[in-house]
Image (cartoon, rainbow, N blue to C red; front, side, top):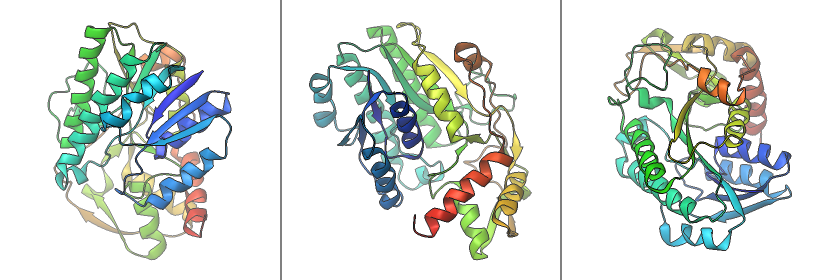
Length: 323
């Protein structure tokens, strides 16, 4: 079996690719190595994958239909698609909004067009985000909750992609599952995400900024659990005209200040904390209802932060010291 995987040089993409290859799948990988953050990190992830049998890489922007659409004809052996490529980062959407529409809406549309041209397509799994729940106060977040009040452009583009997918399922019978990720962390993570920024600040003695005293809560989900859930969903195709949307999270809501405490213990240093009001782009709490994905494929997150954070810091210290 061959899987087309977009965003393969990304954080989650690396772990999903490794999991696919470990079970004997062939992976046709696409990534544009965007300079949004240090490209050396992306190339290092890619080097890990290129050392494995069954991995083929195409450097391309998923929004570039002139490059992407011919992939369907060139690779008719592809039976499944995992679409993870996106422009990430909630706050950066205030700086470069055009990048989010290009990558997260146009890029998503192009991947759907590639998928519907694949003659043997069985299933498309794509990355959405818990950010689509916006300022919802009902907890835990369930797939049937309202998602029409995004608090960031990033969230709006992810919700737009979900709606485009629904239309393609209706029009073309394209079997799809959208996964709403909840605060993923772990080895090979991104420099713009809180675990990396907190760890770097603690090690260098710079202040760690906590919004509202660190009382914001997040459903921190370890990346290995995420990868297992992606593969589990991939193996259970949706009905063509009824696309699925599923939460994929840890099913625990943890205060950010508790996450920092575990990070301090793992690093053996105390943080210098600065308290700052919560910005408008950040919600107070995220908490995933995962009953639907559990019923579908038995997804069970196994990694609490007390286990996952030390695994992240072990990798991070190694990377910081030169890989």
